[in-house]
Image (tube, rainbow, N blue to C red):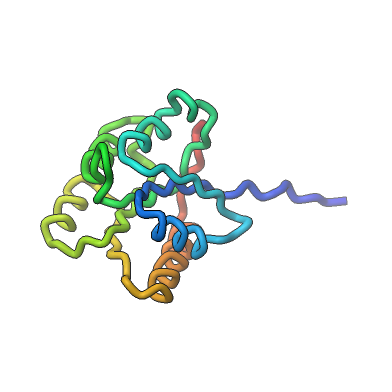
Length: 148
C-alpha cells in the first residue's frame, strides 16, 4: 500500500499590534495547511525569530507578515535586523501596513522587503488581500526548505 507522508503545514509569523487586524488576518488565512504565530511588537518578534526565552521551541517561519507601526521596535528596524542576520535573511518578509507613504515603500524595498502591501480599510477587501498573499506565497512561489 502506497502512503504519502502527512503534509507539514507552512509557518507564518504575523507581527502586528492591532487586535482587529490580527483577527482579520487569522480569519483570512484560515487553513489546515498553515500555522500562524502572532507577536505584538518588534522586540518580541526578534526574540521569537532568534528562538530565545519562551520562544526557544518556536518553529521557523516560512513567511513573515510585518506591520511597520509597531511598539518597541518599528517594522523598518525589525526588517533591518532580519535581513542583516545570516540565519534569517532568506525568510520572505511581506510588509503589510496601513501606510501608503512613498518614503515607507521606498525604505522597505531598500531594506530588502519582498513585497509591500497596503492594508485595505474595507473588511472584505482586507480578507481578499490576505487570501491573495496566501495563494501567491504558498501556491505560486517556490520557497526554500527550512534548514532547522
